[in-house]
Amino acid sequence: MSDVPASRPSSAARLSLSHITAQHETNLLGTVHGGVIMTLVDSVAGVVAARHSGGPAVTASMDEMVFLVPVRVGDVVHFTAQVNWTGRSSMEIGVRITADRWDSVGPQVHVATAYLVFVAVDADGQPRQVPQVEPENDEDRRRMREAEIRRSHRLARRKAIIDSREGAA
Figure 1 (cartoon, rainbow, N blue to C red):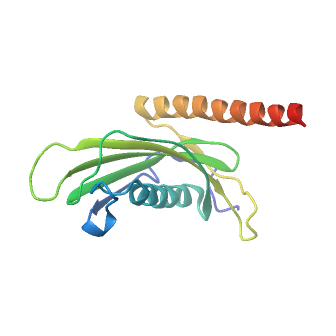
Figure 2: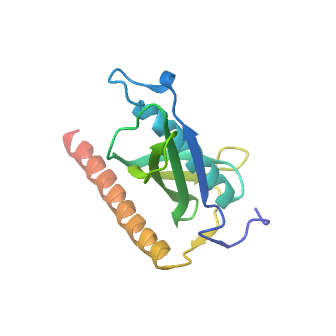
């Protein structure tokens, strides 16, 4: 795609989304179902990936999602996402999830953090090149370093699994 730039700053596609949780989103324990949070995480990360890459991008993996505290009905959940790292056609999107009560002023609580890998695709569903992310500050540089660590762990894990299967055959 010739109209996609060679690089974009990390702030270019950053996105925040807020959602007020409701009764119909609860699990059997009466808190908001983790799948509801995960769906919203995937949605906000997908928008960031599409904006950064200049077109469609698909979820390749959810590398990690750590829930720290439950979300309750009536919480306002805030999702903040940005591109942490880019490869040739893939991007790691980091999402920080916080929550506060709908009916009171109080501090936001860190609910969860998630890391997703998206692949930019063309009209035929084939991977396409993405702009490289340009970190703009020390926080962005830290995010990029940690994303590279997660990537190396993913690749090593995949290789170990393939090697194990070939040895078991």
